[in-house]
Structures are given as C-alpha cells and as structure tokens.
Image (cartoon, rainbow over all chains, first blue to last red; front, side, top):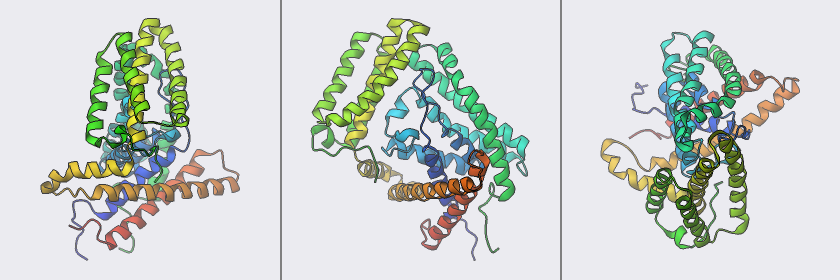
Length: 191
Length: 199
C-alpha cells in the first residue's frame, strides 16, 4: 500500500467528525441555569477538553470548530437543544468560543508527553477548563459592562468544572491506556 | 433533518442568507454600543416587528419568549443586586434584543440554505485546494454520527445499569469513548474505501 500522504487522511476526517458528534451527544444532558448570569452549567463543556486530550490539538480543535459551525448553521446540537446563532451572541458566547482554544491547549499539552499519564492529563484538562474562563469571562464582562461582576458570577461554574476536570483526566487516562497510540495516529489494525 | 426552522414565504424567509447575516451582525454591534434603555427598547421593538413580518406562529415565538423571559428575570435580579436597576435594565434589553434577533435568523433560515450559502462563499477558496462541496458532506456525516453515537450511549448506559454501575461516571464514559473511537475507525475505513478524501 502506498503511504497515506493526503493532507486530510480519511481516518483523521472520521475522528474529527465523530468527536464533533460526541460533543453534541454530551448535550443530551440539559444545562442548568444557576447564578443568574444567563450562562448555563453543562456537561458539554467537558467535551472539547476531552477531544483535545484524546485526539490531540489538531484533530481535537477541528472537531470543536466543526461542531460549532453546525450549531451556527442552525442545528440544535448544544445542550438543551440550543442551536443557531443566538448561543454565540448571548452571554455564554465567550465560553463557547473558548471551547476551540480549550481543545487546542489541552491537546498541545497532552502531545508533549511521550505516554500521557494521569499527571499530564490532569494538567491538560485543568488548562483546558481555565482557557474557557479566559475567553468566557471577558465576553460576559462586555455584556454586563463589569468584568469583576462577570468573574464573580462565573464562580458558580467552579465546583462543577473541578469535578468535570477530575473525571475528564481519569477517563482520558483510562482511554489512552486501553487504546495506546490514539493521540498520534489512528489505531491501525492488521499492520 | 432536525432543526428549529419554521417554513414560510415571508420577506424575512425569502431574504438572502448573506443579507440576513449582515443585518444580524450590525444589530449585534449596535446593541453593544448603545448604552441607553430607550434606544435599546426601540431596537427590541424593531426585532419584534421582524417576528411579526415573518409570521412566526404564536406557539413558536411564545416558546422563545418564555425561555428568554425566564433568562431575563434571572439576569435582571442578579444584575440589579450587583450593579443597580438602571444597568440591569440595559443589560437585559441587550440580551433580549441580540438573542431574539439571532433566534429569528435561525427560525427563518433552513439549514440546507445556510450550507449552500457557505459552499457558495467558500468557492473562491477552490484555488487553495478547498473543496466547497465537502461542507454538505461534513454536515451529513456529523449528523449521522450523532445518531450512531446516541444509540451507542443508550446501549452503554443500559450495560452499566445491568452491572449495577449506573452511578459511576467512568463505567459509562470509558466504554462509550472506546466505542466512539472504534466507530470513528470504521467510518475512516469506509471513507477511505470510497476515496472520500482523494483529490
């Protein structure tokens, strides 16, 4: 067989597509509006971090971009069946844009490790979640006109995100152990 | 395909996708620039007029209105407490206007119309090796994957329940992810076999 040298091999495309769908399926669990900032608490924001931690920076980020593109086109793939352009313009817009960077950051950190173990994954997921705040809070601040208030309101996400962070790191570690080489190349069978 | 679209033949429905997006973008910027409640209220009135023009059935806009109102009440209460009533009103009006307008775009624009618009806009990129027609393919593939993964999620959840492990996050997430990755491999092989990524 000739070497697969296409710019986007089918396996990469498939992983990107399937992980975009994976993040969408995480949205089956509806969001919880707490704290009155108009940004729901969701499980879905663990998806981009997981995508980066499992697929690596390039494919992880691509899957988040693909998902968000479909959402923007009007497909109700965000948690609670939200879709269209409203989620990007609304107060949670910054957090959603932050997903792209979250997958990138988590992926870049995981890729640095030879064999991603729990410590590296914990670092990557923590960085991934913090990145969401980095974009989300200033965006929310632009809405409220008060960065401090936006930061205070975003505190309600911390307990949930801390729990999600721990879960994502553990899950990614187990998946990497079960399917070694997931990060660098697709599991090539029969070779 | 599932979507929030409401079919219709009004001016708002028939307006080109690009024009609607431009109006929406201009509106979103204006909303952020305006700092006085009366002006924002007027702008909200314009958006409401858009809903009337598009003849969105009451059942649909009532559902939107209920969700928005609930959000607005929460946001108003907290912002009032943090920043005062005047600022809270401005923030709420910004929120309502921007969200209602974006929602109107989604209600009046079917997904395939957006897809073909994106394909059209991407066609100048053809000389850089981008294939615009693959946008539709990507949308279809992803929606199929969503259906497949929802089925897998249900099976995995039932399996975890059968083992009495329905409360464990890893007992659900790990098998779900492993099967997700396996599904991706199968899809990749199918795509390669059909030469989907060949030029």
